[in-house]
Structure formats: structure tokens, C-alpha cells
Length: 170
Image (cartoon, rainbow, N blue to C red; front, top):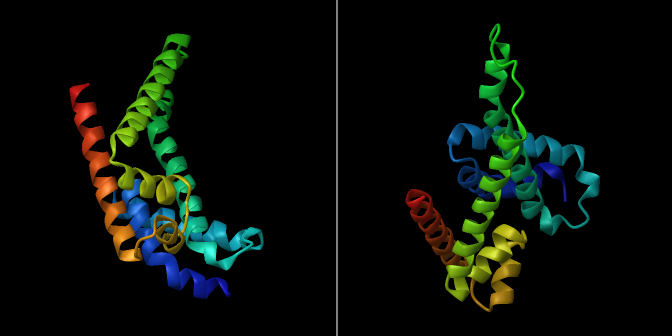
């Protein structure tokens, strides 16, 4: 299938996923554009056109994560640009705190995922963690695509609520 046709067929669904990943419309639009450019450059690596949506979504997630990493570094870059400021290199305790925070977040996510009822946990793993296309996930679950989408929406909402609760407790 031709690249333009695939993009036109899947860009809206991928954009909606990027909204969830990036958290705002502007970043989602930038990420989608960047993901489409990367996909176009590497189209020869896609073996099956039916996997285009999940492939483009994975590319988009990586682009969004890089964007978020750059945004996280921005205060440090601004500080280092100030005359006489930011000359002190963070010590090992800073790296240790970041590692602990990362482990804590992974643990919270794992616990929240484990707390999901089985039908929601399974659809979330298939779609958002493994990148299984929607029709394939529905087939594996033995449900309609509409039912799978409903379960996925509910799984994401439950997961967000659980993470918000844990982070506020914090």
C-alpha cells in the first residue's frame, strides 16, 4: 500500500493516541508530524502494511518521549546558560534520586496495571504495551472491535485514576 494512503487511513487514530501520550494538542501535532516523517524515511523497514498504525504509534511514542526528555532538560540548559550559574555539576546523589524516582514510577505503574480487572489489563497490555493492532486484539480477546475499544478506554481511565491517587498520596 502507498505511504500517503496508509497515513490518511491511520493518522487520526494515531493522533488521538499521541494526545494521550503527550498530554496536549500542540505536542501531539508536532509528534505526529515527526513520526510521519520518520515513518516515510524508514518505510522500507515495514514488512506488513496492516501493522502500519501500531508501527506509526510506536514511532510517535518514541518521538514524544524524546520531546519530554528535552523539556525535562530545559531548566538545566537555561541554568547553565546563566553567567556564573549552573557551573556545579550534579553529584551522584542527584542521579541516585532520579533512579529511585524512576523505580518508584515503574513500581506504581506495575501495581496499577496489576490492580486492573483481567479484561482491562489484558486489552491494555495488548494494545498499549505490545502494540497489537485493534482488530487483532479484538480477535484474540474474542470480542468485537467496539467492545475492545470500550475496554481499552475503561482500562486507560482506571489506570490514570489509580496513578493519580497514588501520586497524590505521595
